Amino acid sequence: MSDLQTQLPTDTWIYTSWEEYEQIVTNLLDEKGKSYYYKGYMRLEMPPVSFDHGQDHVVIIFAVTLFAALKGIQARGLDTTTFRKTGVQDCQPDVAYYLRERAQVIPAGTGIVKLDRYPAPDLVIEIAKTSLLDDLGTKRSLYEELGIAEYWVVDVQNTQIIAYAIADQGSKRIQKSQVLPGLAIAVLEEALRRSRQMSQSEVGTWLLSQFQQKEA
Image (cartoon, rainbow, N blue to C red; front, side, top):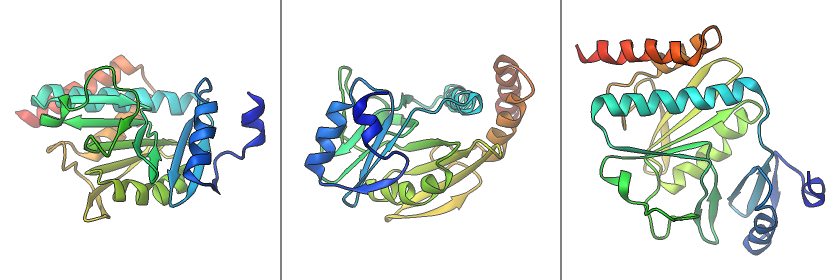
């Protein structure tokens, strides 16, 4: 861990100007971690190191991509990518998806996705091991204001997914995805539970049977 990291509090929101935040993030470019900026506050998160967090991260990406492929939905998934509305908001969700006609909207070679120029993702997913309450609270408000269409929080401890549809800068709980019609949140939760007992390839086979069954 760098000297700069040891001097800054992590996993908490601290008041700072946008200029200070940009300088801090620039100095942390070579470090692994995530950064957020909202309502004049910044938050730094150190990289997760738990087995379950990493496993759920992989399973959820595989499940969403598989479902989209089987349904013929264009999808572009992004892993820990920076989305920025300069001077106002900044975030690095664990997973984000652009769907359908938006799947090709971000050109190759893009670094930071600037939301003053490009649209916000259709789906954002946070994998929560120690950050659950913040993911359900402050970050949800941030994503509401950014205009994300759908937001999921994966509760690693309880193998649960809390999913929200977002509209008009507000959100409501959902049990079925609206941006991926036909995808039940309960199926994804069962996949997470099964991943605790079997290999990811076996979970993939089970998901394939579930998704194909829905088509029949």
